[in-house]
Amino acid sequence: MLTRRTSLAVGGVGGAIALADPPRPHEDQNRRALIVIGHRGAAGYRPEHTLASYELAARLGADFLEPDLVVTRDGVLVCRHEPEIGGTTDVASHPEFALRKTTKALDGVAITGWFTEDFTLAELKTLRAVERLPQVRQRDTLFNGRYEIPTFQELLDLRAQLSEELHRRLGVYPETKHPTYFRNAGLALEPRLLEILRRNRLNQPDAPVFVQSFEVTNLKQLREAGLRTKSVQLLATSGAPFDTVAAGSGATYADLSTPAGLRGVARYAQGIGPDKLQVIPRNADGMLGCPTALVTDAHGAGLVVHPYTFRAENSFLPVDYQTSATPTDYGRAIDEQVAYLQAGLDGLFTDQADISVIARAEYRAGSGQLASCRRSCAAGTEHQD
Image 1 (tube, one colour):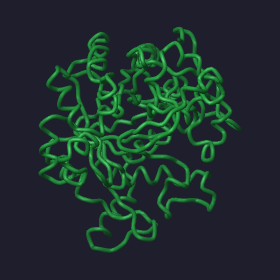
Image 2 (spheres, rainbow, N blue to C red; image 1 turned 90 degrees about the horizontal axis):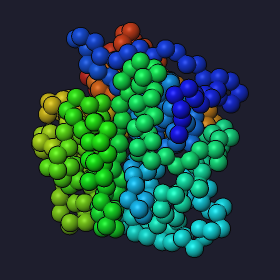
Image 3 (tube, rainbow, N blue to C red; image 1 turned 135 degrees about the horizontal axis):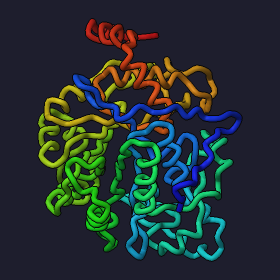
């Protein structure tokens, strides 16, 4: 674990990442808060869900750090994107764990690999993180093998340390990953999450915490069990929450995204986390389209809107925001995020927090590009740059 005087190197490969003094907290009178959520930390610059990634996100200006939470065999919450860790750690190179490789049904899909619930925390601590998207982020592979899998408590300790050092209150935005899967394995995430939030004095309505999930039942159960901080219902462009799939009935994500569905979400959550394409879809030609009614409808239900995931590489951008035919080159990510912010967001998930901090500043400075986009959409014409 880092000591107070330890700071991880943040220089990028081939050039340093500028560390501007981030403004404190991003909420003005007469203007809504616009939070920058460090998606898995600074996943665009370091292997995701590592203390190095989280620290870098904070130093680049993120307001919240987002860990995905899974559980070990001995019941400890750790930060990994999925329970299967073959693609995010070096477990395959550990012969002592070769026989742990297996196939399991994860939310109805057969997945082969190594799973956190088959390892104790001590065993997981012998592994090291690797870049999940090496074809897209080859430079990040420089850091493969250098960082441990952190526990949720270690992230909360880091958050407290950096809040003091940076003189601003950093938040955490944990996601309960596959809660039905872990409940069926006898390792329910919810009581463990509640206990750790209480122990760290973060289970309060004014705490800088959002608890998020793609499932519905566990968010309701958390609220009934005493969750007092904010929660967010994650949405998707298709499908349904797995708890409703497993039960054989219930709302789809499309149902939850309607005005009536959003009013229902507001009974147990304070916000939604939609796919960004639910906010502004792309046209048939791959260019950025016009905003949907989702943000307006969510605000009408009293919900904040924090879409995912904003990334800088061309492969993740609309055609009209790409800068070359090379998928790994950076495109016009700042401009894309300004356009989305102008659609009325309350925050966004980002792999590159520094880019989102700049986009927020440009949006608040009053970019005129969005106004023309809205006029074009209102007139029924397609906006192009």
